[in-house]
Length: 226
Image (tube, rainbow, N blue to C red):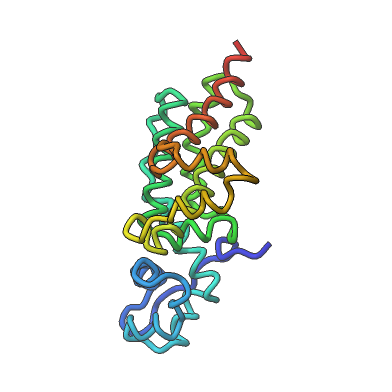
């Protein structure tokens, strides 16, 4: 497994305009937030920094390494839970923060799983979740699996949500429910009845329902230990 975190950054001495890894990552994140990963190139980034493209490679060996560095920076935006917080408050707070950051940085949530989250800020965020769950009585393995499971739900939900928003979200014309119902009424009546259930048509409501379901599963495991 290759990772930018396995090598030390080169010293920046003698580089033009005081170019540094930090400055490169900061500008790359601005471009990612504005235009997404598809529009980011080392050449465009160099132009934004007023530097020669090859000078970037002194500090960042590849574009993938740059993306890995940028992904880790977002983990630094998480508000870490109080070490003494109860586990449910800690988990809920972190998962709401994850969704918020996914909506703020869509390129970031789409990169989760594509790159290994082993940077210092990602590890600090993950590590902050262990103590509340260990204090609740879970083993380290069960705590890690619980964090992975609940975050996997939020990441999956958030990717679908950012894709929906990118397509127009609530500003796009609503689906023609009547036409959909006419297509499937005979073969799939339960699906057609579901179209009239109002709870499914709010993003916030669906998120909270799903988060409750996963947290209820962790609660059951914690309760079984008592």
